[in-house]
Length: 389
Ligand code: ATP
Ligand code: MG
Image (cartoon, protein in one colour):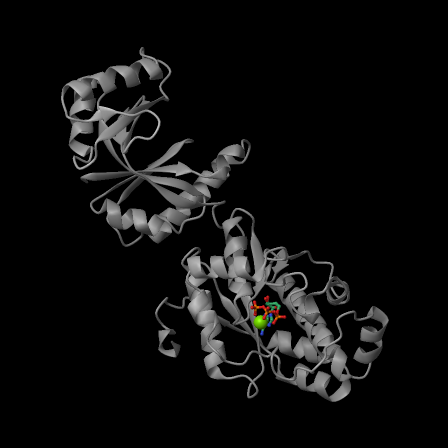
């Protein structure tokens, strides 16, 4: 193996007691991602090392692994400063002019202190090249990490996505629609280490196959950050039609959302999910006012996490563009929320009214039936649903 990638862990470094578990899960996630690559992975409490043949390609894959703060293509040399100098001169970009040396002395038995080492190595580089020193705004930052197993030098740090390794928090069920918000909510929950599975409510024939494929495509995009995403599809037609038939117009959306939460919470328990996640954002639409949230959330005690609750739409769109879900989200297929929509949905619904209107049909039977008939899609490939684009 010619090349070496060094991974710096993200926020998990602050989790003293659970550190080992976090690092193990991160390692499993990296192993799974690189299962078809010829690599050798090793780790300690501070760094993970990946020996490989194609460091650039591997580094770009690792940019979607939560729990990684930085990815470095590093070069291992022995502790002899002349070897360090030679390797440094070899990797420093000759089209650049200025540099500084940053030394990190992880091996406290190493006799020379960091500052002194940086000065010494910097002096040798000055003597043996045309580079000039600039400690404030250098073109090249040469980092030297002195560790007991050897010295590592590098000039480029690539940002990883940060966050916690997916899986450290257990499972969460994301209500995934074809909109802009819920894929972003899923991405943000994955980033906190939640093992996200998705629940999609479809209402054929009122909603189309294209609408479903759009959701599957979105799931496949967020799956690039996880590798474990599944999509559970709820047959929601009968429930929606019953609401349409039995409930007053202005309460239709509120009651539909209450039914969605009921199905979601029931199914979440069934699959061992601890929380629900959705893309609600305070005030964005009538069903997302605080009064609406009170009425809708009332049907379950399960925690409902709303990662984009306090973001502006434009901020959500920025993230959607960054994670590549935006273009798919804006495709025009009808969602079950957009059919049967009254002109003026209530923005300050009352709980007692919801309960009263729901008495008009046997919703529990329909909920049980819908939950029993959920179809699960696993192992979809990233490109499988591109034909809708
Ligand atoms: P999004 O852009 O995420 O679709 P939205 O602004 O369109 O959100 P709503 O349609 O009111 O808002 O939905 C709010 C949230 O409810 C969505 O973000 C999603 O989490 C969930 N949701 C809505 N429709 C569905 C559906 N058909 N299947 C699963 N979840 C849904
Ligand atoms: Mg929507």
